Structure formats: structure tokens, C-alpha cells
Length: 118
Image (cartoon, rainbow, N blue to C red; front, side, top):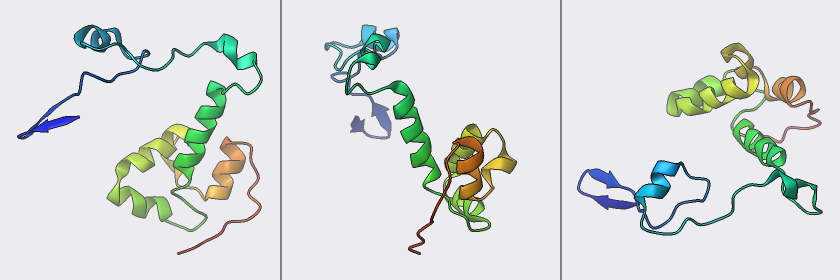
């Protein structure tokens, strides 16, 4: 992005092929990247969209732990973490549950150990 004064202007020289049509039409550059094709999922070594989504969910879950009130503290600093966990778990009540319960109930994973470095 290019910053000028207090307004933000988007750099129109870089955008992805999967960008919305209005962004592609407003740009003066060629789109970059690849359009996702489900046919390539079946090839060896292919990255599946589901794998990327699971990775994103696990990354979002990494901000919480099994301690009481962790998400409540984090939500004061960044409420989007709480919103993300609500999307993953389906409700605010579920989002505030311990990490091991969230992993088991919503990701079908069993947590063997939690390493606390705080």
C-alpha cells in the first residue's frame, strides 16, 4: 500500500487473479498468482483447500489455552480473536471453553499435552 497524508491508497500494481472483478477492472497491471482449480487436488503433492482451512483454524486457536479466562483477556486487546473463535466453534459460549475441549469437539483432535511457556 502507498500511504499519503491520512488517506490510504491501494497499490494497484499487485493483486491476485481471484480478486473481485471490480478490482481487476480498476487496475493497470496483470493479475498475479493462480486461480484455484479443484482438478489439481487429485495430483500428488497438491495443496487442498481443506488443508489450508484447517491450518488457518489451528492458527486462530493458537491464541488460547486451557486456562480459565484466557480468551476474555485476549478479547480486550483484540476482539477479532474472539469473533474468529466464535466462527470456528459456533457460539461465544463454546469459544470461551478450554483449548482441549475446542480441539476435541470442533476439530475432532485429541490434545495430548499443552506446553505453557508463560
